[in-house]
Image: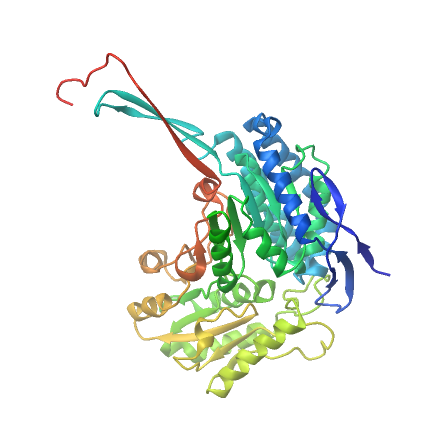
Amino acid sequence: MTETRTKSTYFDGQWHEGQGAPYESKSPSRVETIGTTITSSIEQVDEAVASAKQAFRSKEWRAWTPQMRSDVLIRLAERLEEELEPLARTMADEVGTPIGACRGMQVGGPIEVFRWYAEMALKGPRGGYEQALPLYYKPVASASILRYEPVGVVACLPAYNYPLNLLAWKLGGAIASGCTVVALPSPQGLWTTLKVFDILDELGLPDGVVNLVTGGPEIGIHLTSHQDIDMASFTGSDGVGALVMAQAATGSLSKSVLELGGKSPNIILPDADLKAVVGASILRFARNAGQGCAAWSRVLVPADKKDEFLQLADEFIDTVKVGDPQQEDTIVGPVISETHRAKVEGLVQASLDKGARWGAGGGRVDGLDTGWYLKPGILADVAEDDPISDTELFAPIGILQTYETVDEAIEIANDTVYGLAANVFGPLDQAMEVAKEIRSGTVTINGGAGMRPDAPWGGPGRSGVGRELGEDGFAEFFEVKHIQYPLAGITRPPGT
């Protein structure tokens, strides 16, 4: 028997019976139903937004000090630590991420983010919550204060691939700054999010500060176009992100922060040790079954090292266990659904039909007939005009590109509509110079050292608008108010 959850909508500080259509969550590994949720109605979206608006304007929430907001974020992090294992198991079943990565990236990462935002609640935006400008003397002497105040009601729409991470990036910043939230998770990350809101319900936040609605595209459209939403924070594809921005503009002309797609280059410089970097290169585009916007899915190697790299890659892929995400030694789990796997296979086949070939790995996994699995692989000899070279596949599949000179490698790396992330393997001095030339929001050298919440995340082009995390990302949750007053009897000092 699977569970049916009727209370899927949270506003005014309590759970409510969903009034929308039922949604059946399925495990991409077991291909069985996890549970059924009765989702929200359009009317309940209005109620949740009204709840958030009322809470934002209330004296109770405004009276919460930075210390109180920091404390509640710390308590949230502590409760997530206590629930780490069951949350990780739920996510492994719902999203397909292997359990080891669930404990680390999928739950451990958000805990770190909430703790960092607890620090930022005390610190405030860059320069503090209130800043004095220098005295000004035109036409008369005056003083000015800049106050950084919460933007208001934030619609938070995280994607399915990292449901708790992406919620934490949005929810943490909103609470730390003093905003209120209406969250709408991807239906494919729904059960994880419901468990997180069960924890939020325990924390004693004022009614209406955090709210949850559930459902499909029609719920999302109504939420992001709502006239009482002050900011829409969305993570997902660039196509849907463009729609979210348009919907927000037609509603209240609200601000949009969009973290969208990528087709990230991984430049392997001529002096890099292929044997040392091949494994990291493959694992980085196969992590979470390739369902990550920053996957290094374009591998750039010197033309004279192409065959050597592909041979090493094929040997390494044979050592990567693809399978049940609940098993401790699994490295790559399934993609999210049968529909998504079919879409990916269709794009790959079109590329093969145009002359591409599997240079390493690829295809389905022998013996895995249940679940939406794909074997990590690298496509070689891809035509220059093949759309797959600049299409985000969200699958454990890389594209091999070759270059003759480092300048050509930089040109190929920048030849994309995206600009979210990139990596350079090679001697530090050489890699640093290349990193400076790549148009990307984040460039790691020799693999970097993992996500850090105090660094901004986002990028130019179709990778999005604005930033998340870091002081730049925290600033997105604020409006600036200028307060000015004259200073009677003060004249401009001579010589100034």
